[in-house]
Length: 326
Image (tube, rainbow, N blue to C red; front, side, top):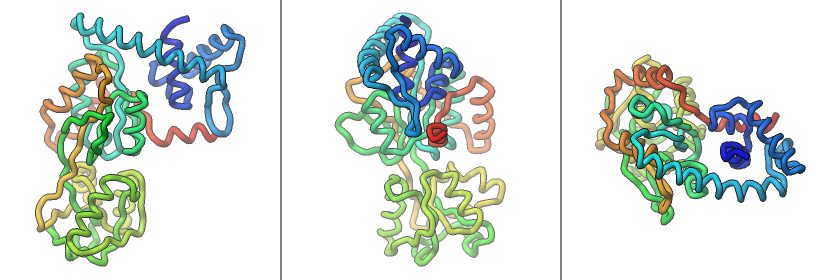
């Protein structure tokens, strides 16, 4: 039995997805299915069940998973130590982040990292903030990149950068003629925002509350892209990270307005599990995130293109859940 097969099996159990396990290990989905069949034939029992609820391990599969997880972890630790002795930075990194950071903050850093370390396989997952912390502690991801990092005993936090929070409105809004606006002027304005448990929503609510009013939300979403589309069609204004709306502002579909009260910022941080041995690849990725030159906003599209053309990054988002319903 190959350790790679055990790793694939662990990825299936943890993700509930054959296609995700395939992307994580850079093999086809049929190859993943074949590896599961070979394990079931070897042990003469069913290990995986597929149903409406998704892909789940049987009792025997759960037993194999727990034993395999320890074997795979020990093997990866051995690989890390050998790589530290050698000069090649290789292996895989699993990073969990939210859409606004993954789509609009990370591309230039990903481009720089993949240019420097082409032997590393990078897996980027779009998750809700609470899920990032859970997956990090459970060992399903190596790193998380979050906004408004929470203090948790099991998690180490490394400062990454800060976003500027701005107001965005559609170009036909009366506010669109202004470059700056007072928060007091927004009392009674309709807002489109993140869902209530999202840290950026909590922060923007606190800003408005501190300036004397409670925002009137007409729609709430779990990701930045849907919020932008809702503002574009005139459903309301929104307070969002500036980096996430610069493309729309350049196209003229949204107007960015700063606040006369000053600059409000959103801190971003890199997080990893306390006590976990980080691989050389993870160390190098943190180094790039914290020291690399950040391209000017005009170069952002070029940075994104560079990531795509250099080498594909395995990406998994909430939409993959749909395959479990088929």
